[in-house]
Image (tube, rainbow over all chains, first blue to last red; front, side):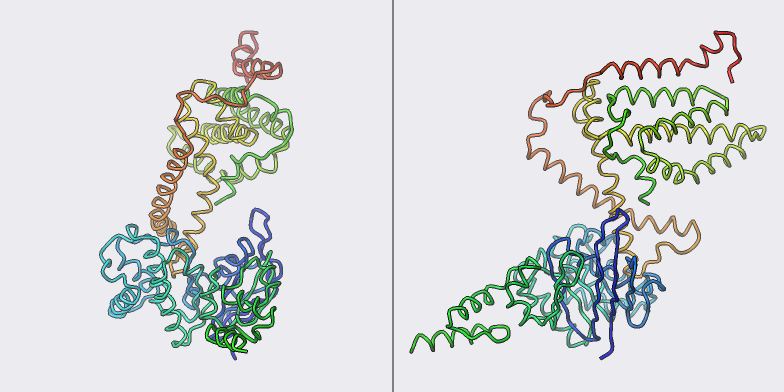
Length: 276
Length: 248
């Protein structure tokens, strides 16, 4: 499969002298859905800022859809890679919710009727259409987060990078974001999420990239990564409840762990043992 | 963006200037300022810059101090150009004097901020009778300069991530582009200051009229020596004149 993003031995040192990335190599295939996980300060956000050229590697290189990020401006790379920042307050500035979503499309010179149609569609998907004439600064944190996601999805980049999309969202809103993730998958988009939300990861991603201290320490499908306690401990993550339960049960010989456990399967096996 | 702002950022070191009371250091900078303001002589301006250089070198802060002066060079050149164009009659000497004066004043105050902790500064202000609210406001605004610089970068990156060409076009277009940056920045900083205010109140800020301090500033012998030397330096042109010598 073609590569959407290739990260090749990238080191990044911040102007203050902190080395945030220490030799990261990673390949993301087109249409793949990956999660980057790891403790705070492990370099996740620094890494994703390399994908659209906001940061350029101190050494090594990042190639996005065949383009070396050092050789293209952010405005060009952003057309391919849509980046939703962690803090919505850093990116919202328009007078109305509508204008906020229209802004990138206007920058890329979309025809006005396309802008109108897309803004309406994505505001409806994100359930923000009723706020279209309001100031985005008056929205709640969760609404602002959805607004920034809508603003990126509307201009339809091939690769979508989301930094903590579910942070500050309640259960229902998380479900909505999950729905959008499924939509992106059916559209064949390449999606990269940075998150601490293990439940979300189990539901959506093909592969987890675990980071610690500026390095990638493991890459594995969720079924493997999230049921390996020693690996998760190194990335300072807690396995999901179901995985923890399954690990405990399998240690006691009540359940045989293969792949990511399914709740029905766990119950069945336990009941079977019970009956004997 | 960050480099000129680094100029006023304190780094901990153990030198003679660091050991001085902030008040005497401030007086030292003020006297350098006064000398610079009250002389029409280019030689004296150069002498002020030169002596500041020596003091900064003694305080081992050259590495931070020199980039500051480099960073303000465009501004110095602008002052030079404006004064050359608008002085009547156009005078090269006058333009040089004004731009050197600006350089001298920045150099002197950069030295003060590079060698004084914000905490000491707050103490000095309070012990000079400035109310707590104001001294806190002053030190906090200093404290938030690097944070603000970081926010500017993040907001700029967020704008460019959505196809906005922040650094393209002629200088007027670019200046206009930065207006876009201001909106989220102002909203963000106002929010942050409200949060800080709440956090301060939650920790009983303002509960007592005049809170006591664990650390109190004390002037020592070396401080009085610096004070006397600064005072002497401030009046040096007059003294030279009084001695019947021609001031430079």
